[in-house]
Image (tube, rainbow, N blue to C red; front, side):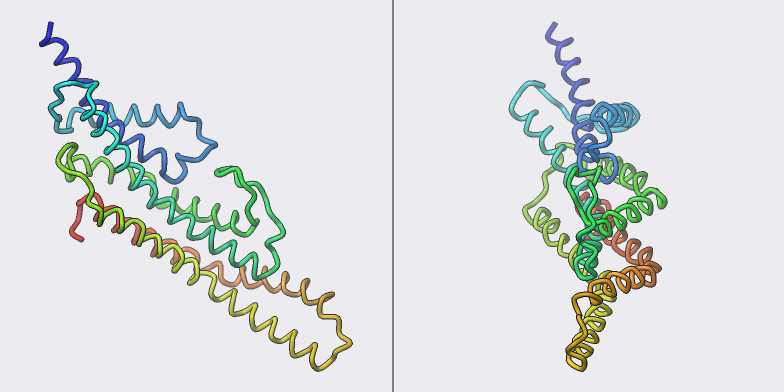
Length: 260
């Protein structure tokens, strides 16, 4: 009877531990982690993927499935998956931040809509950039790259072989700085253009004090803001590709798939 229980516990552990890493990825990954995706669908996708890869995953000996050590090991796998998914989320938040900055500078920030992913009100420009980034993510098969990476991690970074060092958690936090750098780079051209436009209105007001800057300046700033967004939208793809390449390299380094 003890042999049967040990066999059952080992089989459950061989399934549960990879499942925790995969469900952690789906809980924080772009697109799949959205509130619009039902939890049952998310869990079902993780279940199917786990069943596919369990036969090739190296088993981890488990004496007692309901022990504290097994619980800690399962939580470690979930944190690894969440950390990898969080990196992809920061890629899309880069463009949301850039859109919000542009919206505030052009006076388009008052136009807000409900974000179906997070359930909060965001500027329409930020939501527009988010939709573009999400479409590019699915177009370049970013979801398949994420799944492939988490599957490869089970071989390159096996379960029970070690745990992330404090430096790796610090690397995730520091890598978040690229989100602000890339957002500033993407919004730099609209910001400078609007600064020049506002400076021109200041000169006009100084030259003609009777000109009501408040009546025409706000409308012109919005019109020029839309024009600038249209003129600079061609650089969106290159910015996304650069940020996505950085994210892939970061995920590879965390999972020890490629050298740092």
